[in-house]
Amino acid sequence: MTTTMQAPVPTFDDPDTEGRKLAIICSKGSLDMAYPGLVMANAALSEGVEVHMFFTFWGFDIINKKTLGHLKFSPVGNPATHMPPSLMGLPGMTSFATHMMKKQLQGLDIPEVPEFLDLITAAGGHLWACRMSADMMHLDEDDLHDDVEAIISAADFVELSAGAQVLFI
Amino acid sequence: MTIAQMDGREIHVDQEGFVTEYDDWDPDLADLLATNIGLELTRRHREVLEFLRQDYRQQGETPTLRRVTAVGGFPTRELFRLFPKKPAKKMSYVAGLPKPVGCV
Image (cartoon, rainbow over all chains, first blue to last red; front, side, top):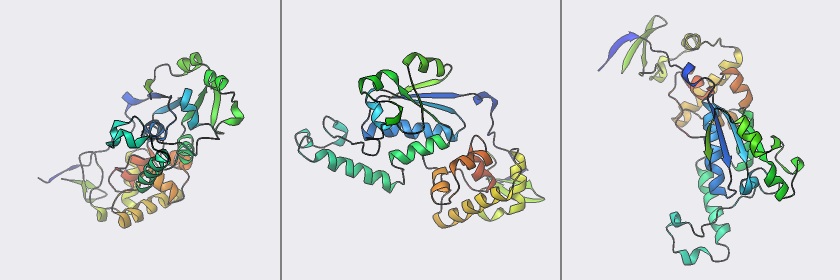
């Protein structure tokens, strides 16, 4: 049906969502577990939501300069690959699976991890590193992605995520 | 489908107010759409809109924010400055295109 009327105007600046905050705790460093956090952070930012990402434990690999460009996907113990488990542990399987996953992501025009981090910070997202993980791995700020704002304690993160929706990945 | 009166003529829009017919749009309509959401278009805004329109025509879908940066060459920071808070949706609204469907 066609009707003629006054043009509706989208409500982009809904006061109900004003001040919305999202805090994402990234605790895993494999390729397949890095992406959910990066994608959600980026989506939230483009919706005008304030975003804080806190990298802890294995999630440190996502911001460690030495590893962030080389995250891997291991099919071992992952039933979602729908492949015989006995094959998954064969030599070379991790790099093969990583290669395949990267190719799929590339085909969808999804950026690689380093570019994704740049995109998130350019969109105003905040990156924070976990103090305990840094101490365990003997890393300091120089070892981390340049846009990581600081190495902070768990208590600091709890404080800065006040009022936020929290995602643990 | 809804036909709305805008700029002294009939424009096809969806329920939210996004223009649904590519050819209903022209730069004057962009000014009006921008005013609707509290924006005043500068030359730079128009360059972004031009890229969106052109890319839509070639690809058949509205470019995502990342594509506007990666292919169009407009830095993400600038897009957030030109179209504050929700650049992807605001850009497509003013450009008379559907919202981008991609996740990234």
